[in-house]
Amino acid sequence: MEIGVHSPRVVHFNEANNEEGLRNLLDFVEEIRDKAVIKVAAYQQRVSRYYNKRVNPRPLREGDLVLRNATIADPTGTRGKLAPNWEGPYKVKKVLRPGTFKLETLGGKGDS
Image 1: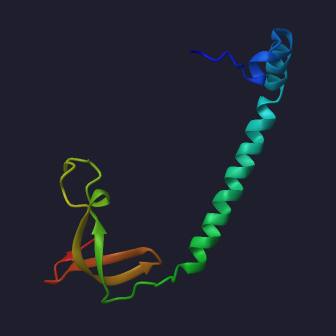
Image 2 (image 1 turned 60 degrees about the horizontal axis):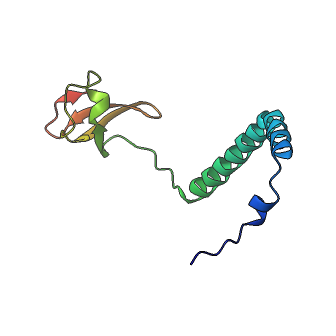
């Protein structure tokens, strides 16, 4: 046995009002997109503030041991997907500027 109860949306459907509503939505598409962009930017700022409150910056000094990103060391991309993502450990030989270092292997061989 089937019960024929329709939802209010189906009962009160009017095609003329539907077309007018769709045209109105098209008029406001840019405004809706702008509001979405603003919300995304605000969310990203909140997440960034939350993250940055908990980060303890630790500048690297000469003699520190570090790992080097292997994809940056091989920009040609010939390594394959099963290759390790990091190389090392390396010792910081010289700090050129913040974020840029001269590295050497633990055996003393210079590297960049």
